Picture 1 (cartoon, helix red, strand yellow):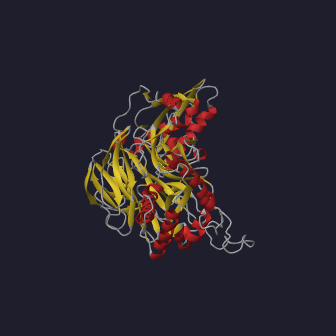
Picture 2 (tube, rainbow over the protein chains, first blue to last red):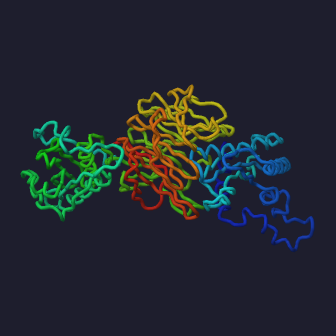
Picture 3 (cartoon, each protein chain N blue to C red):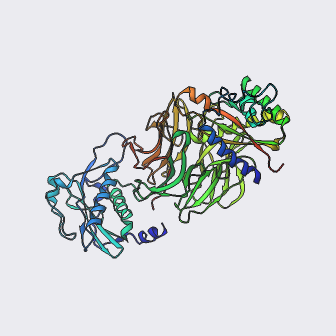
Length: 172
Length: 441
């Protein structure tokens, strides 16, 4: 229980910082500093290193988007979560907190519950793929942590999301 | 805070003079608070007489605040001092009714203030000008000089009460979430203030998200949801000492949306497990949790009826968010909302007669009220985002959160009469959300 708490606080901090970083989401600008690297010589920890957090976030994809008021994974979302499951199975030293989020078009309490449903949908598929339940925790932020802040569907669509946040399991 | 309470509670003492009887019942000086437009009642509140050295300023301040309270309701209209013909220089002297009739002041409030050290005494009378007699009898409040705002609110509550026949709500507080920073990085702290925005105090820092504080029935405790452990959990905070305890720890799930029972002994809250949210009841000191709803739907935002026998809540069991009423121990629930759109965050009125709610329809949000069986739905507001109503202690005014749209969107607190009149923004530095109105102090 205790290490979860620490990890969660750490992750909450990271997630916040990430919100302000335009590069966090994008898959466009992760590959800009690798000119010196030959094929297959990924720098450890870079997105080209398949065991890195950066790779998980940007190549596998750490987030899944949801339709309005829905918590069912669509086909695209399902494929992302399947890839997440494979990665987690191959990188057993990581645990994860799955964040569920909602857009601002809903009441606070309902959106908290809706975010929990979304996070839970991701968790269920990860577990079905063999990821140990004990490695996963879920948290809902409802509409409290929007990634995009315009009041248009273009922003809402990005805010209706789950984010699979990795943390190295310090207790093993 | 405790000091304030102690000093004010000396309160209410009669001035020991016989009051004319039954003036309030049938005289002209009576506002019936009903729906529809009413003409505000004209009144005058000349500066209270400063009866001791050094009480000049506080006398003026108290008189002005009484006027602010009364006129702020939209039910009263002050006739300014510049229009007054006579002035009140001695609290004990007979009132020159003709002078007040001439300027059409239907009600006149006279008072005297004396200060001795840090102790303050305020006495006042309410006059029915056209009947030429006193309405009720004179009263005297004792307190401290720095508690003068509460004294003024108490006088205004008494005046409001005598003229409308309803309980007052000025001597009350609001606990809410203070918001600062841009929408992309909003900082939230619990804060408490007088109903009019004065005497703001913070109860938490902004290191963790806090949501939806709720007052206990006696106003000394606050329930709220905090992410301080990294996961949403319900805390109970003692307003006087600002000490807080987690109310319930969940194994892997989150808990949120708490609310006190009318006797203050138990708490309703939502508990999430495996993505499913249900309503539970738990003792204020923890103990056995009783599950009140079940099934795969989102069941949340519970609120007790004032007699504690029933609970209104929202559920999407029908496919969309709707309002339901069930018994205090759960069991079968009856749906009460049937209009177009979605309904959430129901709150039972302290009078027991109405349920306030948030309604979402065609891209707009509304605060509305309906009878407890769902009939006579009325929408009081409309905007991009209105939500989370809370009732004034007399059940006549509702405060809520209004958020503006777009990247620069901010949250503010608004209040509106249950009639739909007198919509206004609560004075506040910075943003605010999730208000909860205290009982009358």
